[in-house]
Amino acid sequence: MNRRNKRRFALASTAVLLAGLGGCVVGNNSKLQRPTIGQELIDLQKARDSGAIDEAEYVRTRTRILENAGVPPKQDSNAGTSSEG
Image 1 (cartoon, helix red, strand yellow):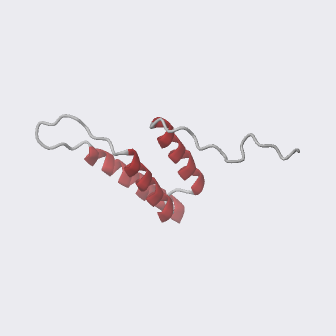
Image 2 (cartoon, rainbow, N blue to C red):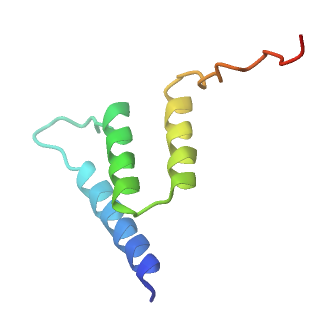
């Protein structure tokens, strides 16, 4: 197993563990709490910064998280402009 695969395995193992712990509830509260959008983005950035995922995976996942939250895609400031005079 090369170094990159070890990182992915470690990340996947951690994700599975955290997903399992995320379902734990205290008392009679039967609602499962999902992480906030902000927490998901923080965790995603930490994964990128640690090298667990590459930039392309970061961008794809960040876009998916924001789309699922109903945040419109960021418009390019030069979109719709023409260099023709």
